[in-house]
Image (cartoon, rainbow, N blue to C red; front, side):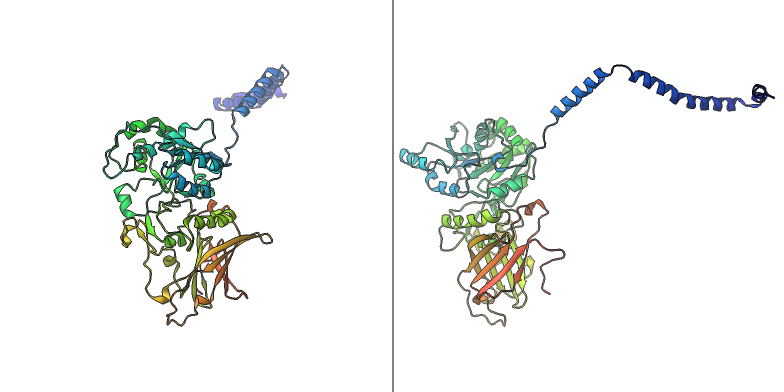
Length: 492
């Protein structure tokens, strides 16, 4: 029996369902062969037009891809500085401390031209300071606050007037400040780099005075401490600010007028506590020696508070800060806390500013709280008048700290570390009955620290310090740096 005969005899035995399965199997075998045939036929045709299309498509696509954005730098920040013809002659010395003319764009805005003799003197400073311009006339705007001054309208418009000066500049941020504001420019860059200048950002901080914040607003960036406005927001504000100002003739100052317009734009304040309004009186040592764990960005009201270093004028004191600022700007005023366990002392280092040695062991929770060496803006010793926690000055002579102020700072080229020296300032009363070693023998403190420009790229954390053994007479040596794994401030 041949194959054909076998097929004819078997096929009647297959059901319709079996026939269907055989057909599907046959198609599954033939379909790949058919596709291969069609592909080989098509590939023999001229495909140059397809290749050209793909080439041009990818070329245009590459052109459309923009390069990755550059990091925010100092030249991306434009400063608008509020001043007046009356105060400029004196206040410009504050700007000389921090202004970097080759790297910073900005404008100083006066209410009227300087007298001829002052203008002539100012020509010598022209290369050290921002250009000076005269604000537009604002006499047409109403001002109805009986306790303030109409100049608040002029100063509030500095945002818009500075924005209009941007002629093709690479501006990303507008930063407003007063003529007695001192900025730590490198830290300002670090903070603003966290934010997208193409979005609406309004960045600043409150007053240190709780009452000031109630009278004005906790939603406001105080202008003396400075505030930053992203380019996108500055553009939106410039378009509507004059219309907005007409609706707020009863407000007191310039910064609350800016905040009122921000409210109309629906933009809240993003608080960065390194902007310091300094609405306080007296000695700000307690504030600076326990600076919050955030970059120091600005200081204000420097004509009101005492010089930050004793026995110096305020200008001389600020000049002294320039040395540690150049060595390690990220660490300036940052507090570290440790113990000298053999002598039962608590040591607090405010790097680049001061060191304190306390008899006895004090917990970090207490040491990081500013001591009330100052009064609030209404000149009352009222602890409830501040918007942050404070601690009282002790009357017990044994609890008074021994204070050492910065005298010099250098970089050790061999170790690439900074060495800063702090010299004893006065001696607390020696009438102490505690059976604890007397810190008065320590005349100087030497602090070793490696600079860390990327300190604020990580989650905020206070640096650690360690008291080092030393053979130097009348000297304490301390190392400051990032905390090691499992390192905490405790006495073992």
